[in-house]
Image (cartoon, rainbow, N blue to C red):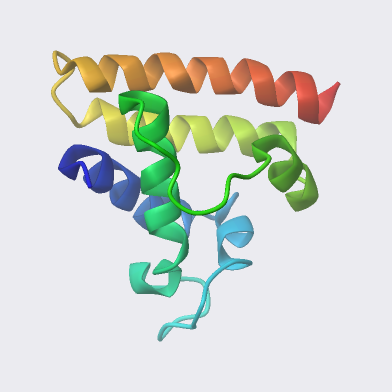
Length: 127
């Protein structure tokens, strides 16, 4: 597991799962409750996080998919994500990336991937 990818994903999830605008989407998939219903601990996503980390390893490093492949658009369409929620997701993710050394190639590539996913999601989810 790539440490920088793991760190970014975990930092993003710490923000997103408790976010007032998009947190409810993440809380739909939590595996257990924490002390506060709107603030699940990261270990409430112990099965989901490795999958997301692997997804970004595939996207950024060309690693192989671990487990079953999935239809990214279909999964997110089923969540009923709104355009503003996609914008919020992107903002939070970029906020985490901005805390990292911008000279690291993987960080630069990650930002490009986010821009690509933004185009794809807008095309397939909102048009």
